[in-house]
Image 1 (cartoon, rainbow over the protein chains, first blue to last red):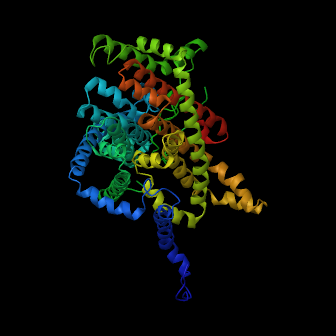
Image 2 (tube, rainbow over the protein chains, first blue to last red):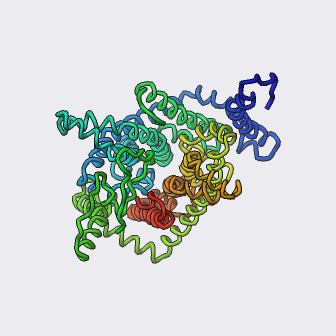
Length: 267
Length: 298
């Protein structure tokens, strides 16, 4: 750490102020340097692991590939449809489970049983039932997203401060209205962090199902390139997908902060 | 049946972990003040206990059978009846295919999981306890955590080849982050007074790690470790489906290619049962490890 100016009398030492900026840059720099140098110095084969700079250049080529954006678009469309349907079904089920003992006992064993099922694997079975069209591929995203959404909504509704509900009821809010006006907003923090988790899970399911059923979509695009031995292209698409996952997560967090500034704690 | 204590009203809600509410005796974890099961006589409570646990299984089998007989989702080629799948499972078990596949997959899952736990807990403790490690690793963690790990599977294939190593690597990648983040979060919130007390009682700096930090963060670590376990299973199974020469995933994908539909169902049901049993075993161990903690009761 460089300390150019002598630290002022009442200021923290310069290292302490710079560390939060320098250390992250250092670690990212180290990873990028390793990725650049390992193939160039012959530690790994440059055809299977191309240096970082070449991959970044190839990202540009991916964006210029006319087949890339249609594939990305069809993936995004299916993902958004499946995700929206999962939210519309999952949040109400989770909230009702959190507030009703009967509903809880009805759904909980089903959740416990289906939780460890690898959802992406079901795509092959869905294809038997519904063919390799959009229906199978949207269903698989719903399956992948539903459980984490239900569970986080359940935790939110079950952990609701009961006094809030009593006050609302005492002030004359009806049963249905208090669900909408007390329980739903009260469970929102948990639901929102559950949605964040689900975004990552559902993209995983999307990609996995697309690579098993190579119709179209970004997963199919990547794995077809892998089968053709286009390793440089594969690395570039990996970088693009990883960045999309990261950006979606970032945008979601920023968006929630923006729309719901009263929310406390982490999303 | 253990009695369960709910945290008092107003206690901070647990973070959304995406985990089901600890299944097994969950009939009692129902929210709400002191709802307890009615004291039933021995036989009655046994029947109820079994009914609550078996009903989803019975439900699935019955619905499956009815759908199959009616042909709602297709004929018995695309949807064989539960009995036919069971027969096929027996055949595959007797000719040795199924036990072999289970052994291969299980070995990979446990290897990937063990690696993920060792790396995740040690890195997590470092991230949680040492500010400079946290600052250095945060950007990398926040980039790779939301990334769908299948996206890097081609890279893993290229680096590790088509053998077992690339499958273990994907299982590891899937399993690492839940336990890593849970450990980091838990260790960064250790009650400082515990550490101070231990230090003033003569525990060495290093000793506090083993005797204070790790025990007091165990509940948090284990919550992440539970997600990691299923992550390892999903990662390995998927990797076997993509590029496998053995294991349950390969059984599934080969059955799909040659249209042995009953075999596909055998593979899916087996891997689901495997996940279910691993999860149950984990929860059982966790209860034994945490008998002293309020979380252990939950």
